[in-house]
Length: 427
Image (cartoon, rainbow, N blue to C red):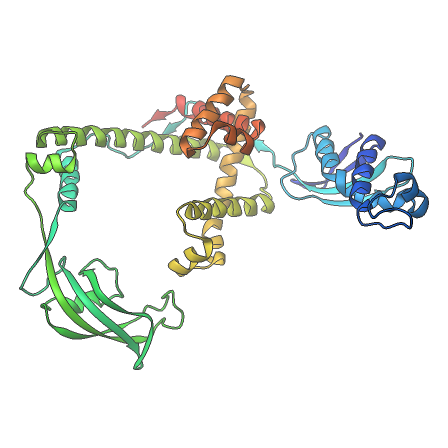
C-alpha cells in the first residue's frame, strides 16, 4: 500500500491511499456473501448462486461498491499508520478509481491530532493553599455531625421553629385550579431545609398541631415545570404534628452507637482525627497534582485544537455522567425531568472547559511520548486487576471490554502524571 499525506492546514490534510488487490479480494468475498442471499436464479434455490454465475450474470463490478465499504476502514487505518498520522475525526473519503485489475485509489480529507510543543514539565514550582494540620475544631465538627445524625424527632406542643419538622397535608392551586404534583398527605417537612418552593416553609414557622394555613407562594421563573414557572399559587395546608430534634448527649455510650468499633468517646475522637488527617493528605496531594499538571500545560504550546476533538470530549463527558446516572437507575430522560434541564443545556455546561480538558490530555500524551515509556505485560495485568476490583467485574470481562492498546495508553498517561508531580516543588 502506498499512502501519501498532504497537509492543508495546521490540523487538516488529504490522505491519498490505495486498496491493493489482496484486500480487494477480501472485500469482494464479503460483499458476495452478503449479496447472494438476496438473489434468486431459475434452477437454483435462493442464496445458492455460485460466484462464477454471479459474475457472468451481473459482472464482478456489481460487487465493487460493497467491497469497498467492507474493507475501507481497514485500508484507511493502515494508510494512516503508514503516513504516520493520527486521525481524530471521521474522515471524508472519496473514491478516485475502482478499475478492475488495478489498485483502487482513494482520497480522504483528514483531521489530525495537533502538534504539541512541550515546555518545562519537571521541577515545577506551584502554590497550594491547603492546611494539612487537623485541628480540634475539625474533629468537633465531625463529632457534631455524627451527633446530629443520631437525633430523634419528638412531638412538641409549642409553635414550630426553624429546624423543626411539621407533618402536613397540602393542596395547591393556581388560579383556583389544582395542578399535578401539588397535593400531598402526611408529608414530613423540615422547616428551613429549602426542599419546598421558596417562601413556603417560612410561612409555617409559628404554626402548631391542628392549625390550618393558606400558604401563598410564587413559582420561580426557572421552575422545571414550565407551565407553573412564574405563577402565583395557594396551598391549603393542615398541620398534623410538630416535631423537634432531640439531640443525645455526646458521651461514651453515644460514641459506641455512632461507631461500634470504639468503646469510648476518646477512641472515636482519635479515629476521626486519623481519618481527617488521611483525607486532608489526599486532598493536598490531589491539589499538588492538579497545580503541577496545570503548570505543565501552561508551559506547552498547541497552535490549534480541532473542533472535532472538543465536540468529542463534550460528548464523552456527557456520556460518562449519564452512564453513571443509569448505573443508579436514573435514565437520561428521568435525569433531565428531575433537574428541569435539557440535553442542550448539559452540552453547554460541558462545553465550558472542554477545550482545556482536551489540551491537558494532549500535553500529558506528549509527555508520555517524550519519555518513551514501555509497558510490561505485568503492568497491564495489574491494571486489569485494579479495574476489575474497582467496578466489581470479572477480570475476563474487563479484558474483553478494553483492548490492550487502551490499557497501555492509560498506564502511560498515569506515568506521565507521575513524572510531572514527582519533582514538583510546593511553595
